[in-house]
Image (tube, rainbow, N blue to C red; front, side):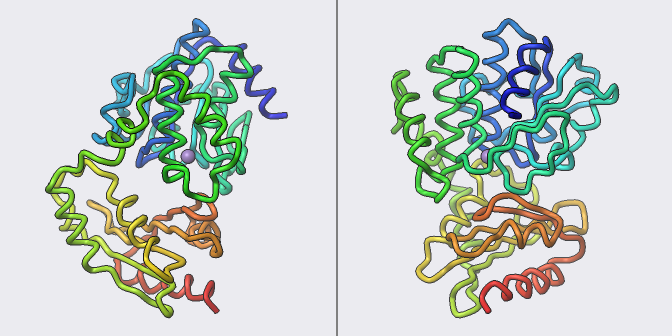
Length: 322
Ligand SMILES: [Mn+2]
């Protein structure tokens, strides 16, 4: 139903503004760029504007230079349809959401279970691995051919959102799509190394420093870390530190939930990331704190200092183990 409306919007409008969530990662960037190229192949205009800049580790993505970080100048960009990808709520777009002062039609394409259905057209599929899988579907429905660039972008989106095809969101369909994308001459070993290798030694040391302070609770079912404000001050980190830490914690025997608490630079807030093996629904836990995400991966921002946030979060998670 909403796929039909999505296709109608894509056919009807001529100039698109594309955005995604803050803390950009592979699926957000891959689906934005693949959607951008889809529109270009249809002869339409498109601009990508995000609240945040793309992490340096995604420099290798074809077309990455098309991605703009929000500035006042970009607030004047012309568009007749506003597409928000891989993003569950307007708050997660940051200031980009406010560009739409003339209330142009909004289109939300997303796979988060916590999606707020905030746009005029909401195409939300919570059983697919990634937003990139949905963009793949658009190419198919619209009869637009893939090429090496677009196949790479969608493959990277799927690769990163499935944790390299190992999370429970990986389906038969996910593998079928990946198999088709591989036909476009993709060097999967090279892509994997670009996405997960190339770790600067400074980043590795930072990872070790934080990981060495990991703690277990609730009979080893919870692993948690903290990153204090000063740890990341004046550091430019290339890797997705959260992903590395969470995957490390989740791989430990007996751990069912992993939590990372990070003091925000410049404000009295704590950003909390949650990961679960499968049993515990961390979307529910993050939603309790005003955030959201997926059943096995979610996040929230909690006001106050880190020790208060830690007490609240640990108490809430305890309920899942009783
Ligand atoms: Mn995603």
